[in-house]
Length: 79
Image (cartoon, rainbow, N blue to C red; front, side, top):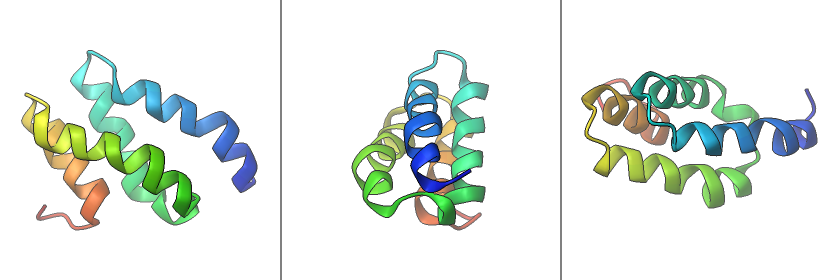
């Protein structure tokens, strides 16, 4: 996919997945972001994705979600 297609089609799905009630959905989207961060537009990452990751990393009650959100934010496995 081209970057424009990712921005138009995939990023909105990520944003919705961040708000899902099921923890597995949230940590799966964090994993996908972690593994594919280099393909994401930096401006969109900083304005739309990173704030959601920070919210999950600090306020989500599920420890797996917190772990994977920190991985996606900081790019290290010992987050």
